[in-house]
Every structure is written in C-alpha cells, then in structure tokens.
Amino acid sequence: MLRLMTFETPEDVARGLRAAGYATDPVLVQIIWLATRMQKPILVEGPPGTGKTYLAQAFAAAAQAPLIRLQCFEGITERQAIGSFDEALQRLFLETQAESIDRNWEKLREQLHSRDFFTQGPLLQAVLQPAAVVLLIDELDKVDQKFEALLLEILSDWQITVPKLGTVKAITVPFVVMTSNQERRLGDPLRRRSLYLRIEHPDVKKEAEILDIRTIDAPLELKAQAVGLAQALRGYNLVKPPSIDEIVQFVRALQLLGRTEIRSEDRDVLLPFLAKTEEDVKRLLLRDGFGSLVATALEYRERALAAMKAGKESFEGVSR
Image (cartoon, rainbow, N blue to C red; front, side):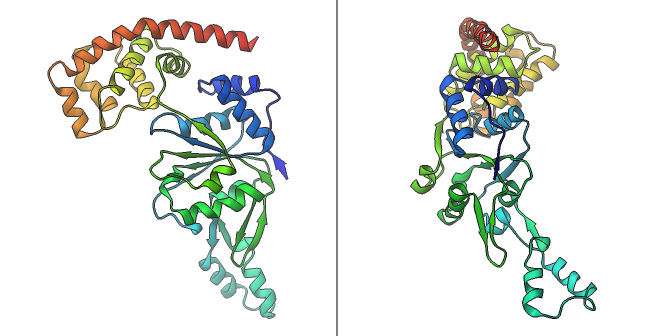
C-alpha cells in the first residue's frame, strides 16, 4: 500500500500549514508529523468554530493532496458512507446484454456484484485512490455507535468489508482527520486507534497569528482590533460565539467597506458577521452593547499587535 507523501521534518509540516493559512504550535506540528509517519488517524475535538475542519483542509493543501470529505449527520447510513450497488445499472446491463452474457448464474452474480456496478462513497473512494489523499470525517459525534463501529476496520486494517462485494483492501493509506464537537462522547475503541488533539478557542496571541496569516493585506491595526473584538464577544455569553473563520470574514468585510478600524456606527451592517441567532442580535443591539465591545477590543489591540510581530519573527526564523 502506498501512503501519503510524508514531510521530512516537523518544520516542513509547520511551513506547509502556515503557507496554507493555518497557525500552528510546536506540539500540534509534531503530532501531525508523527501521524503521517506512523499512519495514524487524528481525532480532533473542541467547541464549534475553533478550526478543526480547517486543519484537515490546510493539511491537504500543504501536502498537495486531494481532500475527500465525509460529512456526518444523524441517521447517516453505511450506504452513504461506503457506497452501494447501482441497481438501475445492474438492470440496464441485464437488459442490454441479455444475448451475450454468460448464463452461468454464479459467474453472472459475481459480475453483477463487482466494483463495476458499485457506486463508491467517500470512505471507499479514499482508500482506492491511486495516490494517497486526506480523508476528513467531519462531526463524527453526530453519528451513533453502530456507525462509529464500522470505521474500526478501516482505521485498524485499512480495508473495508462490504456485503456481496467482499473485503476491499486499501490501495493507498489516507491521512485521516476526524472531528468532533462533543455532542456525544466517542467510544474508546476509536480513541485507542487515533492520536488525540484538543482545540479550544484561541487566546489573543494565537488568534492574532491566525488573522495575520489569513488576511495578509489587511492593516495590522485593524486585524489587532478584530482580535480584541473576537475575545470580547466570546466572553459576552452569546448563544453562538463567533468562529475563527467568521472573524476572518469580518475583517475582509471591513476591508471592502474601506475601514481601517472598527466603529460603533457600523454596528448594523457588521452584525450579520458576528451574531447568528435572534438572541445574540438582541444582546448586541442593547444600548452600549456593541459600543462597549468596541471599547474592549481597543484594550486588546496592543497585545494583539505585539503577538503578530512576534509571530512574523518566529516564522521567519523557521523558514531560514
């Protein structure tokens, strides 16, 4: 079996992820590097909006590998994840090839139950690629234990057993990233097969670095103030605190508006980027609600600016 292109050193992983817009730390980089070397899946847990999915996307970009995504949801079935036989195609084959097909039933059944008539789902696609890919199994906590159990064969033996089709062994070993928002506790068998990462909402320093590398052309002062606003919003007891990506989009919106700072008078046009529930909108529309957040954001700005400058120096040191 072939495996995903490996990075020679953890520093190569750090450079690749940063070039793809992902702010790293030494521990995360080493865990990812070890996962590529040891062919281990990674389980990433944390609150919604902390960049778990983006980690897989950034790694795929860094490794120059395709990303195959299995989006989990309540009620997802094995057919949707692995695939199923295309009954319409089987019938069409029988109808159009009736005169020429072998009448031996065993041979015919074997032919009809071959990969030629099987529509591949994301899991099967990932292990049958001619070159290794990144497989993202997103929001795994939304599925039940039965579905979780079917992943164990893949993650242990890099093969998938499908009724009638048989056991399909991987051509390549994908780099697997599984994410969880912890709506349900995932089982221990899956955890034992994985390397575990916990990602929280970033502090001022980390979010400053993230914004700096994902909004390169925005003024530093604007990005620093946006970091402060994000920190203030997450301490404001909102129903849905803003995600990292929402803050990135918020900064880009300010750029399009031609702003170099966050102003209280822009509240109404900026709220759709920051408040995503009726309750949160009402809170931020209270008298002085948004204005006080803007004031708090200014208090964070100097710390964020210092973090951005330190991050640039650190990355330049790694790049040399």
